[in-house]
Length: 186
Image (spheres, rainbow, N blue to C red):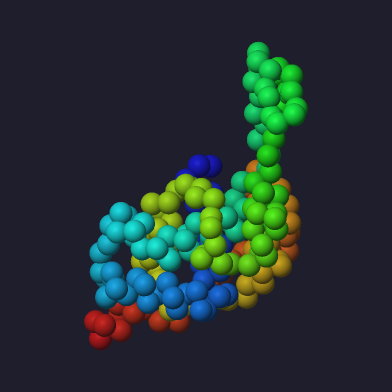
């Protein structure tokens, strides 16, 4: 699943969040325009990672994707672990929920709000694919959400290792309203 299902889900949610939050998309496009003046401009991963707001937007989008929602147990088979005042016996499974961590309002005030300017966890999840895909899609296409509902198609409802929308979901869909490269070539 690493770098496939997880990256695809992050990409879909990031595009949803950008289209659902037009002021963020506008700011991302303005920042990208300084480095990608034309829809077919080329840019390296290193250059994209150096663009501050764009980088924050990717990280915040990954946080809100809740990609791996299940708890993966970890344990030390033969040693005792110490955490603050607790002692964890050898062989005891310990788990952390990414979803609960990412939606904890004591860590992320208004945890369901898309705010790229907040301090992020810095999770490195297929950053190269996400940076490049989002940059090229935003630079080239104008889009709008198509029959996509946040509660049904985006929000976490089920856990199946990879987070899942509701059973009624039509998934995140967009309609391309303009191909900027074709406009330039015309």
